[in-house]
Length: 372
Image 1 (tube, rainbow, N blue to C red):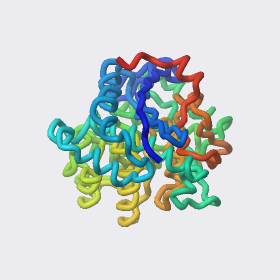
Image 2 (cartoon, one colour; image 1 turned 60 degrees about the horizontal axis):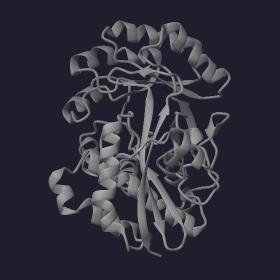
Image 3 (cartoon, rainbow, N blue to C red; image 1 turned 30 degrees about the horizontal axis):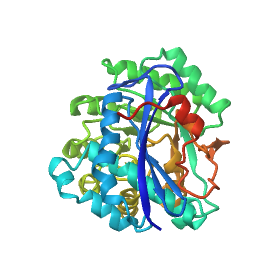
């Protein structure tokens, strides 16, 4: 099999709640710049990354795929994924201009498409190709709510609906308000409405400095918070290490880390409890598997961040023994041939051959944007 051509696409999909805010971001649309790899066998592989919908940057990403990676891939065997990953990741101009950011997101797009081809060629869903367990259950927790721009009443109503009607066994809410007491009051209100049996997680999106994280972090145990996610600046290993040693609530992080080396620093420092790699940001499934294996070696759980809105990460969760839960964010759900689905608090195993990343023609027509 040979790669004959590569094309790009760009989706901008409205988020389900119109406008959402956390401590750092304001989002109205989720961006999915991606690529389609065509082969002489007629198999097409779909891959993409996830962004906050900045059109100019998303177009640069598509141009990077076409201008830098496509010439390196044409004529190659798409099944030789590890070799092709190394070829792209170690491409001298790409290394020289930056080993992070746009180049890594573009690498993720391509890597996902290659795994999609490999699973389709094998006639299996990716989780099965990777040796997953068909009897495994992946618990879903709802992240599509809890936004900081919501009133406390709307927050409480949303989590109540998630638990009572959605069947979720866990919810995640945002913290990181200027007034830390507001965060604590909202956590107390949510815990009261969901009761003790439902898991509650909090996400600060890197907003706090260490003194504030220590002050608020020591109170999180009062509300049985399962983890505090990204409490500090994303690269602050020493700060996270100090926080882990000082509060009783576990720490989760990883969505802003885009290499195995970055995860290694946190793992070596014992500065993280829940490891959250994102395959659409750290170089694709290929490097996600390396991070997940490293977490497993440290006896730590993997709970992927889903910048792809669940599609590839449902596959990797069913495939890897360190992963048993996953967040639910349905913003892009209607864009795929086999949408990621949660039922009664658990994800449904994908059944179609491929990585679950194939985008529908209808989605491209409805949400597609020019790539240049």
